[in-house]
Amino acid sequence: MPRTTITLPNSLLDELMSEIEAKSKTDAVIKAIKDEIRMKKTEKIKAMAGKMEFTKPADKLRHEDERLR
Image (cartoon, rainbow, N blue to C red; front, side, top):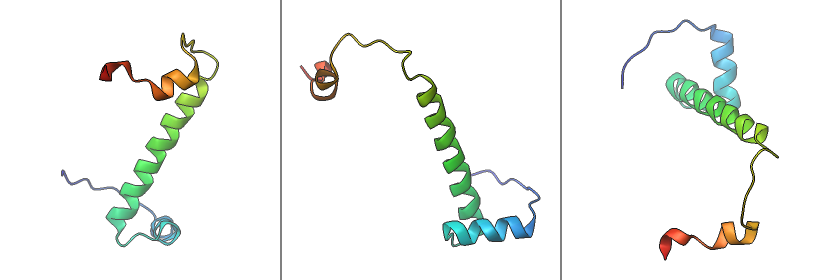
């Protein structure tokens, strides 16, 4: 894993570590970055609501994987 040097306010990092109960500063930053990425992906999916058209009912999409046949 490549090393990166960043400057963060100690108070912000301390608050982050206590909020997410991280064992190290590195763990805290990694968890925060992953959470931010997950939230952005969720926002993109929510933005697509009503814009996709499915040709099969939801039950068939959920329970019938045609690739397995």
